Image: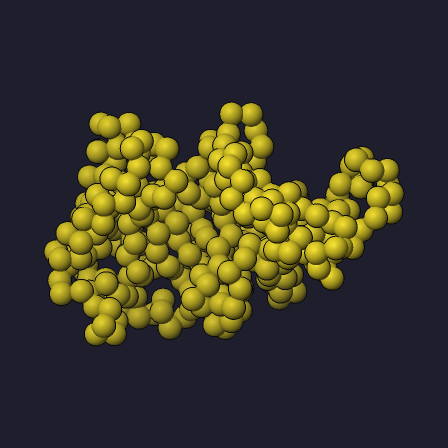
Amino acid sequence: MDSNCPPEYIEPSASASIEETRSLITHIQSLSPSPADALVRPIITPRFAISCSPELLRGLGELAKEEDTRATKVGGYKMAIQTHMGENAGEIAFTKQLFKDAKAEKPWDGTYAGVYDRFGLLGERTILAHCVHLEEKELQLLQSTKSGISHCPISNFHLRSGCARIAEALDRGIKVGLGSDCGGGNEAGILPQIRAAMNTSKMVGMYLPASSNPGSISQQTHLSLSNTFHMATLGGAALCGLQDVIGNFKKGKQFDALLVDLTGKRGPGVWWTAGEEGEEGDASWLESGFERFIFTGDDRSISNVWVRGKLVGGTDA
């Protein structure tokens, strides 16, 4: 950040910011003997357009290209880019004003997303938090560049930013995962985000007309549990470019899993007895237990947590 931010955050110059970013990337990459298998990966992060000068955005776009070239040579991962976009009306107006005369190789389409695109920061590994207020041209641009959205519904409520039209983005094939932006909200866990995403979609459905396209997600009155759970799992993995590695239990992927206790012994939110909803092990039985955990469970219900097949947490760990 080198513009429009508190003195304690501002960096001395765009070039200094780029060099510090490059140094941090090198340090994080050195922590893993095998870059392709690194569990912790660096990510290029312009805080958001307002806090970055055109020179800094241009430099970060060039750095992303450098990292792509490096990854191709050494067989590592390609660098992801994350930033915020379209969170509230004031931010959008200020961004457009700041960058209307900025010089870049690409012409500007007049949108917030177009600012990032001009500096080479949109692409299949770009993660855009919020995207509450998107113009039609922006939806088309995200679709064409294969950029993705990190939907942060609790933060958007907490800061009164608005309700993102996520079903519309999904209908267009735009990648969407769930995020917390925990600094702007009051919940960091993924379960509250799933619930809030469903409630947000209900608010959108109450005030905006449904799509006339038969079978579209936005024709529904709200996002389903399967829609939001997908965003919390495989959708989030795809957003980070990790859909071939994690996100579900498909053979060959890393084993990341939770063991959930539905007996009610670990917390008041979930109570369930075998045979209560169908025969134990059948589809209706499993679906009922799954729904109870998603809607009323919390971390007390999680007995074990595995990451890459290694037990790392849970109430029984």
